[in-house]
Image (cartoon, rainbow, N blue to C red; front, side, top):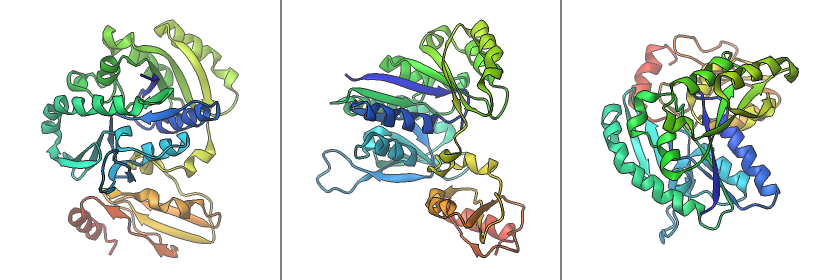
Length: 323
């Protein structure tokens, strides 16, 4: 089996996806055969991937993030790189994709009971991804600190302990409170999980990194963990496909440009990374409009994105007066 390392976060959107993609690319440039892996992903941004052994060549679905990471590795995306994909349809329910194919639909409470069965698929895919590889870089989901979900977890420590994969914890300093988030994670994790963590990374740092020296000392005092580095804020990372709609809630409009494109933020927005080429255009400003806000009067174009719940989103679209 290939060697492996897993990145888990102190929370969602701390930058795990980009870090994994970057590490995959760096390993490839060093001549290693590297593969990405994410046991469970929740995203309506999906991409087509190969299903090994499928003679019909019909393809299956994985999260767009794992598709990106596969490209960074220089290999064809495979459904085994993201064996469980949850595509939210309502606040309490999602379509469940297992190894690229639709498994069914499940409400959040029912899905918790289903996880035990899905671990077998996760471990099966894990074995397949590692075949012929030198290194597999694994991405967790959300945070291992969600200890209320630990007993049936397949995305973070539940997987790491079963597969015996060491973990690096990622904290996001840009949002504030990174010392508390890292130290707090150490505090509440059970010993079985805590000992899987071999160190941590601080991500999205702006400015003079030496100003955080005392912060690193504080984290070491509380946790005893080794710091593997402080990663600077990377503006260019905004050009990469986003994993899920969490990022949209923090997007602010940029400087005024020649063309403003307004995009209503639908409740079950899907594949909004299709708009990335527009965002990359220097004379185009893409503005995501949240519910309750009017479409900007100076928009030259309104783009209605995809939806995983078309009827529900249409009703909300009309309630917001966007029609």
